[in-house]
Image (cartoon, rainbow, N blue to C red; front, side, top):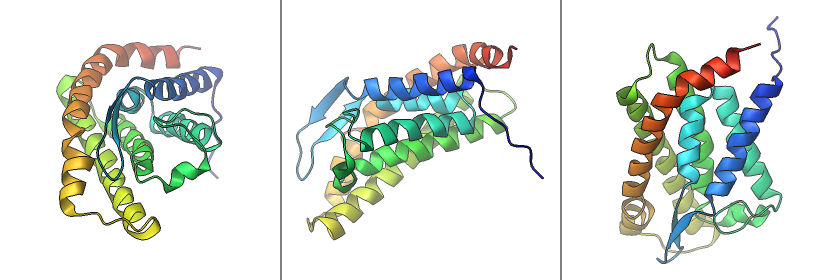
Length: 193
């Protein structure tokens, strides 16, 4: 029988801190007014990256999960507000992509022997591809099947990827650099009794 591991106060605090940082990152944004849905470049992705690169998979997933639950209950922590109706927004898939990317990045970091800048940047790019993959698939599904808007592959490539991916790649560089410096400190703080 597997032993059930409870979260410590430090883990809860760190997970809550990252959930709050991801929420705060939604308010630091650049809105790109394109049709059919405006796109945003926010600092949310930077904090998701840090969660994935610094925390274990359980805490990284929990941080993003708490953030998503807060937003879906109506707390305005998403780039355009909050509430359950957000599920019908084509861009909600990017928020789901945060959870998948954060979990996978943390899992990859747990299985790497060393986590220098180059490896952390590689893990960040893998997270970026997951984040955009989930976001674009959800965007297409909601536009095509739920709100009956025509979505061409040009819209998916240009609006949903090319407009925001370069800035998010820059955030991958910044997060990998920060995580390379902070990773040892965070690990030691979590291990202390």
